[in-house]
Image (tube, rainbow, N blue to C red):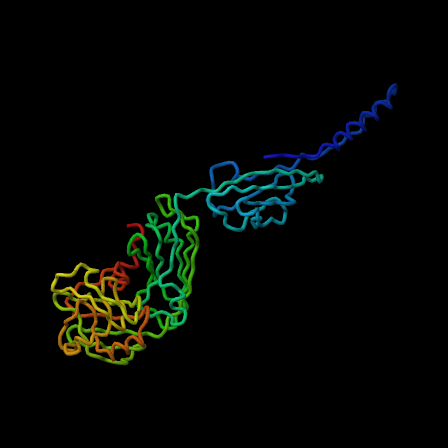
Length: 396
C-alpha cells in the first residue's frame, strides 16, 4: 500500500523560523520565537485488507481517523475496473460498499482523505474474495414461465431445487423465504438433499399470490459448495380443481372450487400394479407420449411389458402414474381396475380432464390397495402429516 503526504509547508515554516532568529543576534531581550502547529495526517484503514480472503457478501469498509474521507474508489481489474458502489457517512469517516462482490477476485481500494488542516493523504489497499470449490444454483420448480399464463393449482408446493447436494440445510433454509397474499402460514421440508419444499397445512386458497426467494449467494452449502446466485419467483394460484379417484367405486369425481363439476368411470392399477394412494399433484401435461414399461424395470420378454403411444397425459408421479386416455380399457372403466397404476379414462373424458387440469391441480387416489405416494416422488408432500412436516427435517 502507498502513503503520500505533502511536506512543503513544513519546509517553508522551518526557513521562516531561521530568518526570524537571525535578526535577533545581539538582542538581550527575553522574548520567545514564534511557534507554529500542524495536525497529524489522517489515518486510513481497510480491515478486510489485513486478513484472509473474505466472503463476497461481506462489505468492504474504509475508515478515516483524524480526518475525513474525500474519495473512495473500489475496482476489480477483471471487471474492466467498473467501480463498486458504496455509501459515505455524513461525517466522512466511514465508506461501506453496497453491492455484492465476485468470487475469487482481487479488488483495488484507493482512499483519499484530509486532516483538519486540509492536508491530503491517499492510500491504496487490496482486498481478495474467497474462491469456492464449486457453486450451485437454487432453481425454482415449476419454472415461472411455464405457468405464467395459467397460474398454478392449489396443491402445488413451492420448490427450490439445488444443482448440487446441500449439507448445511439448516443454514440454507434460513435463507429461503415465502410470502403469501393473503397470508397462509407454511413450512419447509427437505424431500432429499437437493430439494426443499414449502407448503401450508392445507391446499392454497384460490387467488393466492406467492413470492419465493432464495438468498443463497455466498452461502456455504457444505463440502466446499457455495450458492452461485440468489433467485426469486412469483406465482398466482388459480381456481381449485381437485379430482377424487376412488378405487372401490371406480369413479373419478371432479370438484371445482369445492363444488362437484363432473364424474366419470375410470380404472386404476391392478392388484399386482396398484396405484399409489393419497393426494397426487400434476407436474406436467403432454398431448402424446410413448409409455415404455422398461423405464421401471418391466422390459421386453416380460408378459407385462408394453410400449405404446398414449394421448392426453397428465403426469401425477415420476414413477409412471398418469391420468390419460385409455380407449383399450373403456369396457373395464367403472367396473375393474386393470391399469399398471395410471388413471385410465375414455378418450372424451380424458380430453375433458386435459382441458380443465394443469400443473399444481390435485388428483386424490383412495381405495387402490397401493402404498402411499412417497414424499420424494415428485409431489408426495401431502402424504406427510402436517405436524411432522411443520417440525421440519433440516437438522435431521
